[in-house]
Image 1 (tube, rainbow, N blue to C red):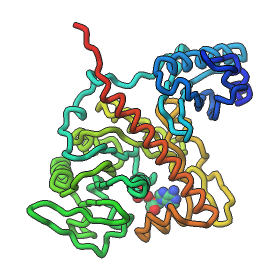
Image 2 (image 1 turned 90 degrees about the horizontal axis):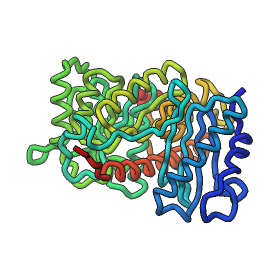
Image 3 (image 1 turned 180 degrees about the horizontal axis):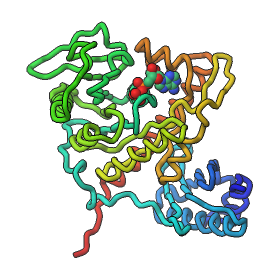
Image 4 (image 1 turned 180 degrees about the vertical axis):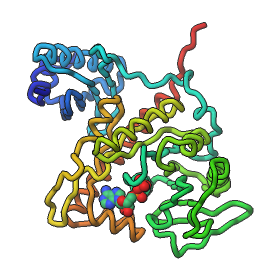
Length: 393
Ligand code: ADP
């Protein structure tokens, strides 16, 4: 047996926040329940406490208690609970997560305190860049570069000044995904000029070396090339810089992550168990480096055929489940579609936001939701990172 949505609703009907005329459920304040094998995600819309973190914390605690007691009565295992407070547009404004310890006790998942953050946070901040966001994956081929490109183009469509840096030094795919093949690199005053494509400023090693030449650099050479690409590109003022990291958790992605002052990282994962195991390793790498994890994206979640029929090829929900198990935010799922594959191969990412076919509409909606969640998590990370921590000697 596993916990059901109606059980969660019943348990939460015991919670009436102070000042509310009714309980969360009958008052319509519980907007969304997501469940996966004992991991529960809630969305609450409570405008009266939107400005009051203490009140939100108290409500999250009351939800935890109600759900915990309900699960005990029903003999069900509660693996984790995340209580998201959303605004009228559905954007997350605060989120409290609790996770079961091996002995079953539920503990709050704490962000790493700023004072404990090592290496990466000591890296130099890049000038005039609002937020630098790394996109990583535990292994290659899960669609990390595709996700990075669509995040960059999607944020640019929303009016942000966006840069996209191809850190995948050994297998740069931006020239293809962004359609840069016909463009020539330009150097001005000793600095690389980024390629302007689809509203994004892009830079990739793939345009600075011969396309077919394998890049057999050893670690230090790869790090040096990445450092130069980052620092010697004339980015200008950017609101967001998206960095497509090399896959895996080896020396190269690790050192690159340390070279940047990141606002956070996004982890891309496909639903299968093997991909999840690798993604867990990527999450641990970012945690160890003191980098905030903005969330997990499930790519190739479900195949949508041209007629709109859905096929669960890889077992939809696997990455979401992994995120919930680790107490990480879940940013959403992108479907596997033939259009997305073709638009990527043809270097036309903007078409992913505009298609009118059944899979195309679903993809556009999924991208929109992913961007909403990412922006919410970025806002939360900014608050966390700018919150001073008390050190008592
Ligand atoms: P990675 O960066 O993880 O190695 P890529 O982003 O280069 O992976 O994607 C590998 C291939 O899979 C590319 O050809 C890409 O177009 C395709 N692909 C990735 N995600 C999807 C998707 N959701 N639907 C269709 N094709 C996809």
